[in-house]
Length: 243
Image (tube, rainbow, N blue to C red; front, side, top):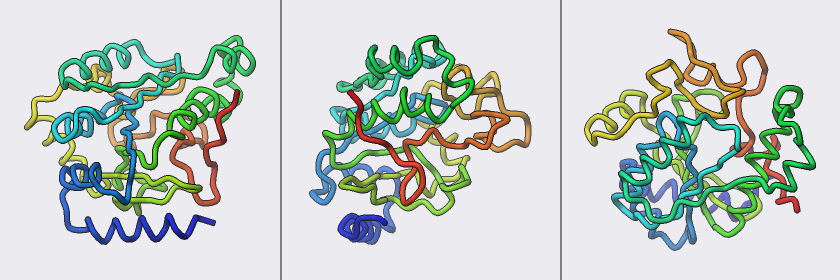
């Protein structure tokens, strides 16, 4: 059951910002005492540059947490450096599992082949939780049009036991994303031109065919649709940080 205090705070924030555009939600939220210390979590994926640009304009010193699973495409690693430099982001923090965690749980790098959830937990959820434990809220790039559990997204969500999530782009349409990139002359992730609509780890990401859901290329052929960092309320949630 969700923490009622968090629920009340999220409801109050959603009411407060209900009629604001995405940039204003972000700008005001980063100064709102109801949120506290806030970080942006970014995959530097196909649409990430939108929020990264917004942050660079309204508060370039905002901590940006980039999860390096050590299984990312080289194009993603290169793109992260390019965007960070172009947007002059001043506090990008690379988040990784420790060498000990990987050695104990995935010594030969094949965990994703037989237990993708465990691999995501090891390489994404546990390291991110460890870093996010320092913050009161975090910013995500999720949007309603991405479907699934995201269809009912609001600007603010409770994340028990003590954190809030901010989704400034929750109500955007696909064309809004493309228009923002074009209007601000933002660099595209190089894999987008090769048919990758949603970009994660190299072993678990494939191009999307015409007419497919944008996230169809993630964990193709399995029932898995999320890495786990966004699950709350009775479904898979992040575990505590492991030693």
